[in-house]
Image (tube, rainbow, N blue to C red; front, side, top):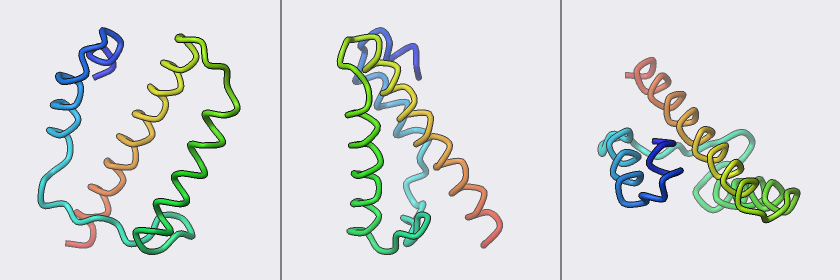
Amino acid sequence: MAQHLSKQNSSSFWRKVFKTVPPAMPNSSKVGQATGPNDICSTWYSHYQSLFTSVGYDRPTVLGSLLMFIYEILMLLSILRALKSVIY
């Protein structure tokens, strides 16, 4: 996926992302201390707002931050899959 992103092939990148997320996977109702969709959204917004305002805006830095964001999302998805398999 990182190769698609680094080559600025966004449509191919997002197709790969969508293939990694099972369509029937339910959304989490709690992330850390945040509960419910609005609280979870605010938590992630604050997290990434502080992340992106703490770095410069030159292309390599932004691309690196974006890759870290994608990595964190993929890690979160793998955790959710693992939890789903334990619960069901």
